[in-house]
Length: 263
Length: 276
Image (cartoon, rainbow over all chains, first blue to last red; front, side, top):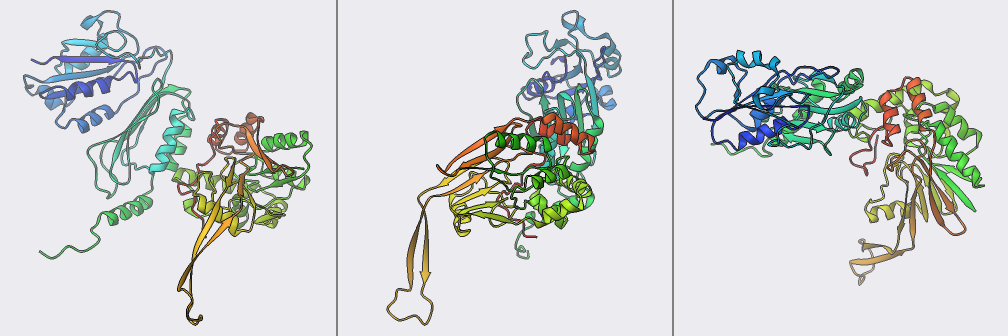
């Protein structure tokens, strides 16, 4: 029987990337759950709002959402690999399952989940250490971008400014962003890494109106300036008229240049 | 004799004062300015006043033209919606601030200035909006200098200073015989024109550097030796950043200037010439 693993660690340490690799290497069904993390003194957790799940389900079609109440009550496949992510700033006091943050147990019990193993970034050698940082204080900023579509060049400028400190000292930023051609990107940045990841989602929408998929920005850092971010967002996101203009051009490019012969 | 060329001041008074002090310190009293006195920066009137007080011969830049013509550049001058919105905001703010006297001064500026075979323009001889980048196709670069009839072309607009020598240039043309010409003449004839050395000298930017750090740049042309010196001048960037915020301009302009990034990125297609 495959285990239920609980993976914890501070922001940006690579929890989701490690889980993605683990899912890809597992021959059999997998499930994922992201628990709500708990703030510590001066350290605010960011509300992921489903970014990690949406990204993993895009990369691994068929991935079960363990937070789905129907999934919680349904009999689980015998070889299900259940992976649970818990944002956690401080290293656990004890090793193994004994170190699990007691505050998370009610969330797990409500979903009938009982971890067989607990791994924490920075504590357990099974996990990589390079991006595991100690944080003293951390603010969080979330922005729901559902239905928003970016001018692509503006997204590039905004992300450059964001991760280079124009809106405060950003330690961690991740987002799912929509482009007018129907593609979406998982944007991922961590202060300890050089450069950002812009990973395209496999599922694309047709260039026809605003996509319905989840779109969200999550930022963690210090002295964040949400008002300045809002001003820039307003200048980057496409209006209905501009979106239609761009998508009409794309649809025209996609249309066959010559009428196909009648059947 | 040495001659200083400055460009792209962008309403940055601290940078202009530092550059003029550097020029004065070297005993140079011939200065030419390649335009863009205003735009993005917080002190448009102060900068124009100083250029007028010093009686610096100046040609008109794209921002100088836009501010008097009413945003003449087409959308494609901006590489993104964000850059366009910020550019329009800066344009409106500058237009509101600029005195009538200074507006008239900008309107009076010529598109180009000549000294012997030296031509001074903001962008290119074709347009204030055209970028002559250092890696531009050599034939096109040579064409810009040669068709204007210049030996040396001084330009700005890119905000990155450089000296480009165009050696061993030649233009090959095929001449077709027109009907009615005497018989026996070949229908088409190849002709090759050998061109002497031509130079493009870009003065960089005083007020909005884009060369990798925050220092203001300009060039000195030593006319006796024909040598060109690219000067980098540190200035009180924080003074300008404070003025940006105090003036009510977007604080992001201060952040970008402080980090050596241009206010708005240059156009994707740098060779594009606005035709509006």
